[in-house]
Every structure is written in C-alpha cells, then in structure tokens.
Length: 263
Ligand SMILES: NC(=O)c1ccc[n+]([C@@H]2O[C@H](COP(=O)([O-])OP(=O)(O)OC[C@H]3O[C@@H](n4cnc5c(N)ncnc54)[C@H](OP(=O)(O)O)[C@@H]3O)[C@@H](O)[C@H]2O)c1
Figure: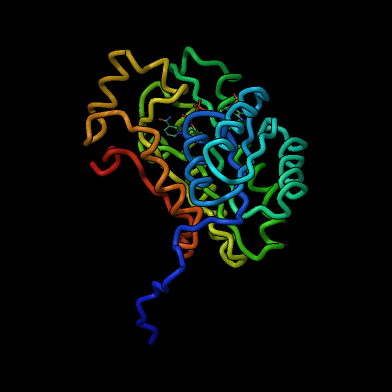
C-alpha cells in the first residue's frame, strides 16, 4: 500500500508552467479573473470573446502583469466555425491545449410572460450550445496530448431555482448535467471535466440588479456571508481544477457561493 507523503521537494501541486489555457468570456468579469489566476500559475493564455478591442485590451493587461504568452481571439462561441478556428489558433500558436475554461455566458431576466422565445433561445445558445461547441473543438487536441482539464461555469442557479430566471436557470442546469455526462465520457482519456458554481459576483452581468432591492435582498438573504463575492474569490477554484491537484475530480460541481447552496 502506497502511504508516502507525496509532497516531493520542487514539485508544485498547482504549477501550470508551460501549459496552454483557453478562457472563453476572458475579456472581463470572472473569465478575466480566472485567466489571471492561471497566468499567475504559469499558463499561457488565449482569451476568447466577441468584441475584439476588449479582448485585445484584456490580453495586453494580462501580458503586462505576468511573464507568460497571452493572445486574444475574437469568436462567437455559438458558431461552430468560430470555435473550431479558436482551437486551431491555439494549436498554431502554442502547439497544445491543456485547459479550457468555458466562462462565456449571458443572462436575460424576466417573468416568463414577459420573455420571448428569442430571449430563451439566446441564453440557451450561448450558455449551453456555446459550452458544448467549445468542448467539442478542444477535445480532439486534448486526446492527442493524453490529458486535459475542462472547467465549465455553471452557477448556483444550476443547482437551485430563482423566480424570473427561467432561461438562465434552465441553461445552467443543463451545464451541470453536461459537465457530469462529459466528465464520465472523458475520464478514460484522462481529461477532467468539472464545473464551478459561482454565487453572486459583481460583474457586468449583475450590474442591472446591483443596486435594486431585489439584488440586495437575494445577495444578502441568499448567501450565508451576506455579501457579494470579490472577483479574486473565484481564482483558487480555477487554479485547483486546472491543475494536477484535481486529477481525481470527475464531473464535480465546485460551489463558490458564500453558502447559498449550503442551506
Ligand atoms: N457574475 C456572477 O455572479 C455569476 C454567477 C454564477 C455564474 N456566472 C457565470 O460565469 C460566467 C462569467 O460571468 P461574468 O459575470 O464574468 O459575465 P460578464 O462579466 O458579463 O462577461 C461575459 C463574457 O462572456 C463573453 N461572451 C458573451 N457572449 C459570448 C459569445 N456568444 N461568444 C463569446 N463570448 C461571449 C463576453 O464578451 P463579449 O461580449 O465581447 O463577447 C464577456 O467576455 C458566465 O457563464 C456566467 O453565467 C456568473
């Protein structure tokens, strides 16, 4: 029976040096914070989003802050030609893809009788189809490497319900189940697929509710910590799931939600 200490001098459990990470939704918010976390652990980064200028600006900021290679790639994750070009660009630039973080996401709020079919489809397309297409694009390259890490951004709202959020909760519930199914499917290939379920972080996505009574009530009321999360509070989970430290994690939901789902 192997009962060693397993911490050899010089081996860093969370080291990502020389690895390549694609971070969709990487131009801002949680995506950019997680990209910075991975860069701080040594990974080269490809940021992916639609607005080219914002991606380039974020990439320049990251490259200035960390001694790693950073590129931006403009793509819409709902478009398969774009997601395939994204994976090819990463291979052409870095020669490999080790990590994919699917952080591109949108939210359209409202009661069901106020929302249109287009609203529902749009949220499902970006959050579910976009996540699936990005996984599909990188997996052949990870299989060639014989390993990989995929981190999907689900949400507390993939685990519990909230009124006036039917498109978003439906999409995040689907991301939870996609993560479990793909985790099982990819385990034989040494590709770890897991998800982070964040609670409320004050990003652009949440600006519309930040100062409303509803926003205050559900953040303070729903979380045990009674406050919004700070962006840096997502970073440890991202480094962990991207690293060797998470090698036995398959289809897991890592909640970073201030206690929302502990109740
Ligand atoms: N903030 C929270 O409290 C919270 C909580 C739970 C889960 N999450 C999840 O965490 C992820 C990140 O959220 P966030 O708060 O960081 O959002 P955010 O600040 O609004 O950023 C969203 C990012 O996604 C990109 N994006 C949107 N649609 C895209 C598309 N079709 N193709 C490519 N990129 C696209 C945006 O760039 P462009 O507009 O330039 O494309 C941007 O980079 C999302 O999946 C969200 O659902 C967030």
